[in-house]
Length: 337
Image (cartoon, rainbow, N blue to C red; front, top):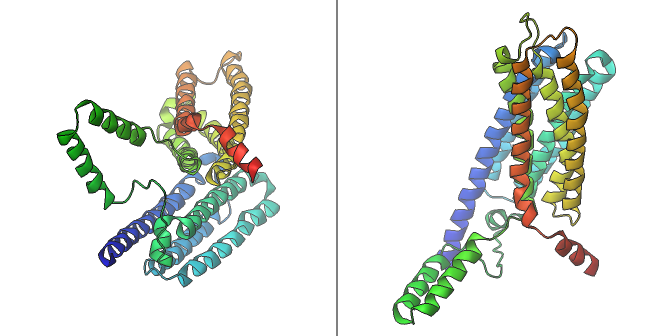
């Protein structure tokens, strides 16, 4: 029994440390992406915003790197320290707000910085929830093993299950074991996603798109240039569409993560808002092309539509497992409580 507990503890330690290691590198890529996006032509400012971003990035990377290093020792006191640092991070929201009050003409730049900060706060809050409530974190920090009914992730039970299947196949009638084996495989393969898992998929898809698509269009700006090669059509428009998508889908991300019974309804509302946004923007897109003196060639609009469709395909792919979840089950459980 002692060896089994030690094996679970080592596995939990490995998983938690890997999560912390990956989280630090995600923060690093986040700050690099923020710096790149805020230095796009239509978001540049004349003040010292770049210096502030670099200082904030280096200080937070060093601070969270130190906190993650302490957390890797598995002491519960360091989780409290993590939340104290998180509270300190919340106060940094004052930086873009102060810039907005002092420099209203560049409100788009500072609002974008504020949006990026909110994304970072959501990511850090989910990491804190993982350190507190995840079963592997509870084993690593609290030395508590949660026992779930029909648990299939236990590494010690897996060989036993395989041995049973072999024995049934060897000594029982050929029809019955075939039925049992297929039923077990179907239950394992058809296990649906949970709403928190879909939330993570959706958050990664949306907030990665917010940084990736404007950067890709900036890199391939020659394909979106005007006839005189002086302006680039898609960069600002794609960034604004991605910002709108990130803002409206933040609510479903939280609802799904906390397993709210009405999360599926909020997803439907956001999907309707996205359709309305596409309809409104399509009229603007048509206006660009049918003007008396068109500034951009036809290929610009075709490529822009293709890239924008890829964004919506990613959102649909992230939300596809939600179709298998019955929302009435969650609503009935809430009513009974």
